[in-house]
Length: 118
Image 1 (tube, rainbow, N blue to C red):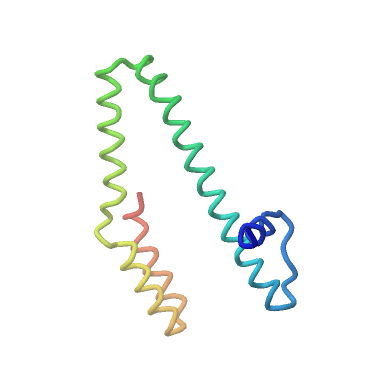
Image 2: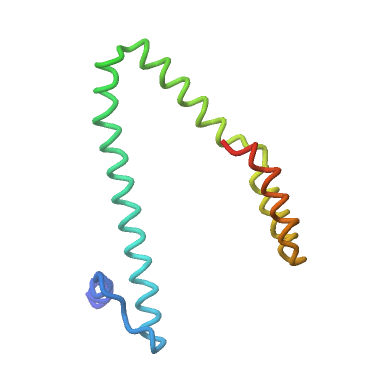
């Protein structure tokens, strides 16, 4: 029961006092709870949106055209995942140029990456 009371005391919108270690700890847990709650809420909205839009789109497009539309959409979503490591390669190159303190080098790296951005 005491543990439940501690958890419920973290549910508030105003931040805790960050001047002492106890306040910093409680603020960290408060932010974890807020982030988790927002993530669950976003997931719920996403599911509800899918449950509403799929029947509307099927009714408007028909089964065959909806299937074609979903196939094309899925292809482009998968293409976005298949960046062949270009993003991580750019991240490493910019980090390396940044460690050498050469802004022009990191700028050139990001310019050469830009054609690969979808």
